[in-house]
Length: 525
Ligand SMILES: C[S@@+](CC[C@H](N)C(=O)[O-])C[C@H]1O[C@@H](n2cnc3c(N)ncnc32)[C@H](O)[C@@H]1O
Image 1 (cartoon, protein in one colour):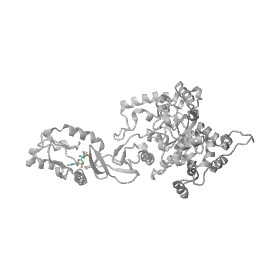
Image 2 (tube, helix red, strand yellow):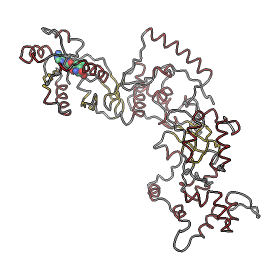
Image 3 (cartoon, rainbow, N blue to C red):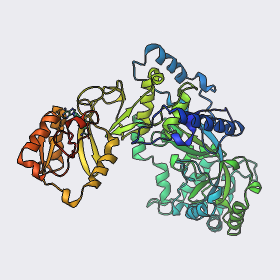
Image 4 (cartoon, protein in one colour):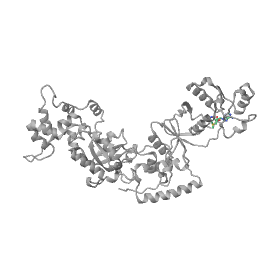
């Protein structure tokens, strides 16, 4: 089961992703010691055994892909990234992140699945984002079909009524008859078809549905999409697929005859669901399973439901879409490199602060960030220089996604349009802004806010945003140097009504105090 040992400090829980807070990737001296010690502990642990749960290093790579992950196209791509300075947006070979896991499951009647899930919870698969009640194609069977073909008690009644079927039915299910040959499903279906009367499908009306391909599907086939099925078709919308592996062959036979819709219901047992069992039971037989499962099985046997309570082997396939950003990056970046695990978000923009060592891989990192946080994130940028201009705007390089740096931020119920190319914005200040608001008292409430910023773009956005939030009548906007603004305010009669001044220009604000005893900073908002 264990494919490879993988020791990466980033796997430690305290480095987990936080969408709004930019976690520093450079620990301070004392932190570093702490990290190293924990890493050693983590290494010792992973060396002995793989932790519970799915991992790109644990699952089986589907046979059509290279078995040595180190030499995949992505690895070559990385080398290429280094050579060409990561100029192009890199495509990721998503298929190479597909992993298959063998697991066991209980097939149970659909109507009982929630009760059984509750009852057997401790024994079910507990992997992130994987539901332990699984559906497989064809597990839904209409009541008419159950009574028509699936329920053994009803079939017995039918047999008594229609002598021919008594002969045909056992052969359909693969049993030998007098002549030693097993009757094909085609013959069985023909026999059923003879039961139709001239008015139409009175008795077997659902067989009409079976014979007729669905319109939607037909259209798909015309478009050339019809060939892809099973995993390929599912994976467009899903990050994981469960397949029952034991019945593959038989199912294919039924599928050929009756169409996709019925390929999973070859035994006509009625609607069923799969309860995925914990990974440690993957290879176990029924008698080796925990008592709770065996008791549930015995109860089902007593109720004569054995046909819909069985242990089956499954293949759980996880696709690129399943894996988290750090899991994908851990496999893509060089082993000794700390994986960027966090970024700041401003509206639709993810703002990275990459270290120098990441720069050769910046496009690849950005692509993974984009893939893993769509649709909320549409653009990934990296800060390319420290802020050292008066307007405090950042030099940003767009690494992936659309190139628009104009975005909408919602904070404390207010909406702000900002253009990161021309205006300073820092989502991390949201808490500080809230703290300031909390500090105001009833007596501090002023009907008019005097707002000033040196940056004309910031002032432009301030005006737009005050309109956007229907506050334009309560805000007076100025575009002046802070010193002049404060002097002007406090030499006018407006000074009498001002109780608070907020000034968030940390470097210089203190110099603007001038004649004030206490000061507020008014930024571009
Ligand atoms: C740290 S940003 C804060 C922006 C905004 N108030 C906020 O909270 O997001 C500092 C702001 O001070 C403005 N600024 C810089 N020098 C200034 C000056 N001399 N007078 C007035 N505003 C100034 C910058 O344009 C920038 O928007």
